[in-house]
Length: 527
Image 1 (cartoon, rainbow, N blue to C red):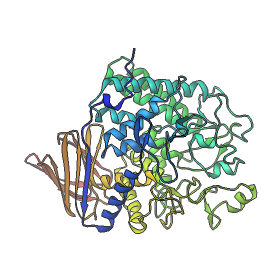
Image 2 (tube, helix red, strand yellow):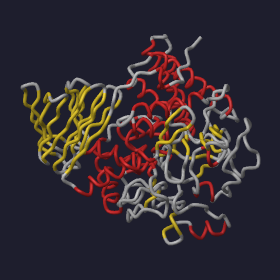
Image 3 (cartoon, helix red, strand yellow):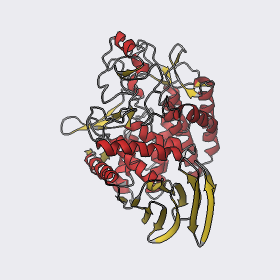
Image 4 (cartoon, rainbow, N blue to C red):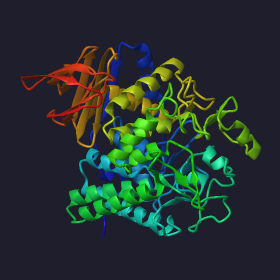
């Protein structure tokens, strides 16, 4: 019988912390704000202290908090693990994870909600935690069972037509409140927000939708199951890799527009909903696109200034799309939306129709790194931080043209975690799995960034021209800025990536050696 390790006291934790000092007073202010506000989002939920989503969202959602907790592991691994275990512990026997978990003491206590799915961004963060808790085998076995059961649930229930494409059944299944691809098709909140039955709705307008991101959730589960199988040596790695590839190929066949190079939703009648949305970034986060697909999407859409590469990048819907909407004065469909008679509750501070969203920023980091777009993470990070430095307000939504925050509550977790993560990716240290990214973008000035993790101290210093890296005061390398250098946990150089928009003369000294290269945007030099 499996040993279910729900108690945090059953695990061993190393201390982790981040210290960052910079001559850029505005950037220092953003860092300090986010550190302080994130601590305010730590709440006690029964047996666990968890990091909630924050602002008006006093709970943990499957869409946000496994990923958010894992990002917070840089500061507190115990909190990060709690954000994973709480979902594993309250998984239903049929395999379904709760979409949301709330806690109201002393009245209702802890409540796990299954009336909507709320996406699933758990597999990769949960695997990352395995390495941070000493490669605990019992935890890994628990995770294997949970992901296998959830993937089985998806295919048992969410392919109601049997055509091999998974479905979302209500608006909150994907957490895209106030989204015009739903509203302009007659769907309202809260009438069509939730659906808790095990059979699809028959009177929810044109729902269910055939969903690229749901295919991505299955793909992510199967890729992590393959990795766990390799670690456990259970002989099933090839099976899970093959089944992941089946999902990827089916999604490409049914939901990828081969001329427009993007994923689109299909309604229950098989009609394409022609909204070019951030769902594609979700699919990149899950790894659902092949490299060729991702390259085409990034080139034609993500880097298109009329679509997703707005002055402040990554609106929820492409800015030139007919579904794009922020308000009646900044919209491609204001008149059409008004004719529906739908009142868009909370559209100022919870809209997936066009504004920027902290959650999109949060997912974009791994989405881009998955496909080698290192320079784009630096460019997006600089632009996001520029508006946060100006306004010092951390809401859910921002205007993609002006960067002005929406009239929402301050302290929105994904926005703050995105800011902290992007800082680590453009002027700091970012540890993922068992590798270390040391990054300094151009024009970041003088700073010192120190990450304590795995019982070591990883320090990166820059004077604006060169960066110097240390592990426990042992110098690892000195190099030009404008690059991201990847090492193992002991400091062995593995790769160098160009994160500058233009080519630069790159120099690096390490292990008594010198190297000089012309480093191009997104170029990877292997060592």
